[in-house]
Length: 367
Image 1 (spheres, one colour):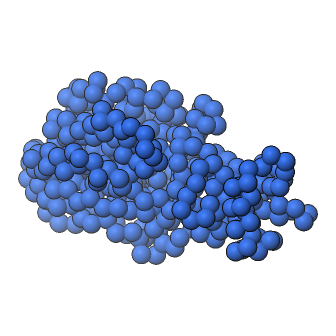
Image 2 (cartoon, rainbow, N blue to C red; image 1 turned 90 degrees about the horizontal axis):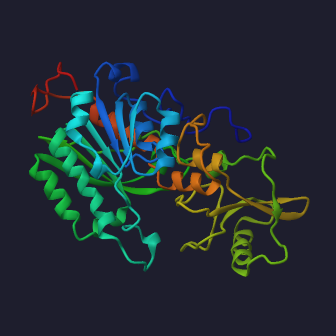
Image 3 (cartoon, helix red, strand yellow; image 1 turned 60 degrees about the vertical axis):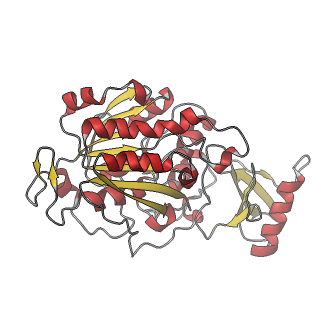
C-alpha cells in the first residue's frame, strides 16, 4: 500500500465504492432486486467490478482475448466467461441459461476510434463490433444498456446509425462524456457513455457532489518497493531531460513530479503529483521523478499503482501475463467507480416504470 494511506482516498473495496455520495439503495437492497447483467467486450472486468459493487448480478461475460478472460475469471469465479468473439455467441442461449437479462454492459473495440492511433489506417470491422450491442439488445431486450468507448467514437460515420438502431428497438439513448476524476478515481480519464433505457429516457448521470479530485501522489508507492535510476545518465533522451527541466522549473528542484516518458502530450510532457494522473493508455507511459541525496532519480509507474489509478480495488487480482500485458489490460479497462455510479443511478427505484416485455415495471416489480 502506498505510504501514508490506510484507506485510499477513493476507498474502493469489494464491498462497494466509498468514494462519494452513497445515496440510493444499499448493496444488500439492490441485491434483492435481482438485476441480471451481461458484460460484452468485458476485458479484465472493470465494468463488471463496478456493476457488482452497485448490486447487479453479472451472470455472463464475453471477450475474445484469452488472457483477459483468464484474469476476469480470477476475480469473478461465479460469472460464466465466454472466451470468444461476441459474433460467435448466441444471445438466445444466454437467456435460456440465465433467464431474463436486465442490464447489458458493453465496451466495443476502440482502437480504430481513438486518436492514439494517429494517422494509422482504421479498421471498419473493428469499429463495427459496436453493432453487436444491437444484436444482443434485440434478442435479450434488457431494460438498460450502457455502452462505453473513447469520446472519438462520436466522429465515426456510423455512430448515428448505432443510436438509430437502438432507438428502433424502443431504447432512448443519452450519450454523456464522463471524467473518472469526478468519481473519486485518481486519474483524469474522459470517456463516452451511451446510457439507454427501454421505453423511457434514462436518468442523467451526475457525478457525486461530495467527491474531490484525488491526486496521483495518493497511489504512488514511496516505501522503497521499486528500484530507481538516475534521471541524468548517459544515453538519456534529450526530450526526456527537457520535460524534466520544465517540471523542475515549475515545481522546484526538491518536489517530485511525473513525466511522460514514452509518447508525448500537449501539456509539456509532465504533470505535478498534486492532480489526478493523466489518461492511462495501453502502453507504458508515466515515470515518477524524485530528488534523493541531492540527485534526481526516476522509475516507471508500476502495475499495482496503475491498477489503483484506474480505481480497481487493492485486492483485485492482476498477475497474469507480462508487465506489458497487464498495462494493456488496464489501459483498455473501464474505471469501476464510474460504472458503479452509473449502474446504481439506473437501478435505484424512483418511480413507476413503463411496460416491459414481461409485465409492468412498477414500484414493487422486480427491477
